[in-house]
Image (cartoon, rainbow, N blue to C red):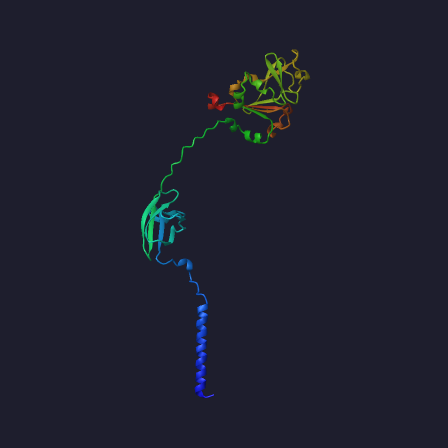
Amino acid sequence: MSLRAFAATLAALTLVATASTRLAAQQSPAPPPAHPDRTPPPNTAALRVHVSVLVNGKQEPVYGAQIILLDRADTVRTDTTGVYLWRSLRPGWETVVVRALGFAPAKALAHLQVPDTTTVSFTLSPVATELATVVVTTTRKPWLLIPGWEQRRENGNGYSITAQDIAAHPANRSVDLLRRRPGFHLIPYRSSYVIRGRGRCEPLVFVDGVPVQSEIVGDQPPRQQVAPELLREEVPSNNTVIASILDTIDPDQILAIELYPGLAGLPPEYARLPLAQCGVILVWLKKGKDKDDHKDDR
């Protein structure tokens, strides 16, 4: 092959390769832009809103402030730096409204221009929120202040009578408060009553935590010796009777009564006492305001 023929062949091959490259470039799609979400459409503007509050002479950002453009339906909020950058907005005038909990709302007019980013800054003023008046009505329950009251009630032992119960079911005599109370018996005798618990003997009575003795009618027998006849409807007059100390207490002066008919359910601090098997009655009296104005406790 001559030199002229070789040169002609090389030129033909180069022409074919160039045509193939151009054809492949036309058939391949164009690569996407590096940051499609950051590239605003042409002829649009951006708005940067900065919201802060003045604290000790220093501007502090307001996180989560609500930003509203009156011409748009959507609402956005500021980030931790107190800023929100709004892109792809129409050029022109926009009314910007900022709201944040605990601050007075603010409003400003912004002029958006292409291709600039318009910055609007807000310094919010704290405002005190006036809450609606709340009226709370409650009933005083001073018996809740009795030492150990709540603990004994939580244990579910015994029975209780409060000043509120006495007001709902008035009694002429304090001993009448024990009527129809499980485990206790009231036996009429002369002008008083004899109280018996499940142990068929006289229960221990405490007034404000102090043990008291019942009134003795006739000769005083040993306390633990109780005649079975006392459980009858009528007490023979030839027997010695222990009348109830409750008859000496005005029902209106009673704050609360705790009744424990026998050892079952008796609080530990009383279960170790002699004759505790006869039952225990705890009487708590009103004091101070509770005594002077007992109607409030009802």
